[in-house]
Amino acid sequence: MKRTFIVGCPRSGTTVVQALLARHPDVFTLPETAFFEQLYADLEWRWGDYRAKPRRRRWRQRLGLMRKGVRPSIVPLLHSLDDERSQIKRVPFSSNACAAKFIDLLDSLASHADCSLWVEKTPNHLLYMPEIEACASDARFIHVIRPGEDVLASLVDAYLRFENDDAFGGGSVHWARRWNRAMQIHEACIGRANHAFVFLEDLIREPDDEWTRICQFLDLRPNTRLEDTCSQSIADLKHEPWKDGAISGLPRPMENKADGLFTSRFKRWLDDHLESYDDLRTKCLLLRSGADRRVRRPNSGSYVTSHPSSSMSQQRHCK
Image: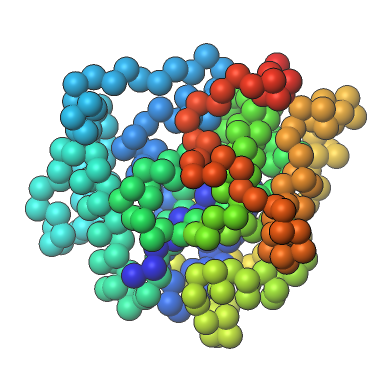
């Protein structure tokens, strides 16, 4: 079974990439689970949010056991994926064993659907890739990336339309920091064989070429006839109405929301404080084409998913 995780900063286009893949007859997918986010927690700290601190590791965690407050959300989630209770008679107390059960459940669901590959899409799982690889060493990751100004404009627009503080609250500086954090993690993964990068603008401008490249990465047949639109359930529009335009799996040009929402002064602030999207995209394109053999993945052998250190460059951004 081929296992794939789609990750990235929220509002970067992860849903449309998931829905696009779900149109392939060999692909099984499901709505966001946030499984690893709930299981291993510390989301705000991993993002590097202001004043966020990791939870204290008590004896339960030192023994590899789940936190008491985690189990009430994890158990129903696993049981919801195993309706007949055929896979899980009893949910393990060990975090790693529980994660392995989750992977097994998705394997089983995909096999039952006669699919050879499954896709799990939770943007925040970008911060939990080491834990994912610990229980699924063959997992593949698709990073979906969009310019920071467009991401922030989409977040502001969604917040104004839906007023969902849990999903979009925190303000523009907060989300600028998170986008920078995502960019650092993306860059740390350049050159890793089990990581692919999809830039939303490329997918929209050259959908056929990008589709072929994604299929090659996932060992899918690119010429297989796709469904006209995604028929699999990937979002609950009652609770996530902002995904309505993406669940068809048909990439389409994005509206420029930044011009109508941001002042020229704020755009200059973004130019000064956001990591360089163009630099990251150039590195990926050079590595992909093989034109620059000197491009190598930074931080070889490790991810940058723990709390960001206080380097000079990080002090410069988003004070």
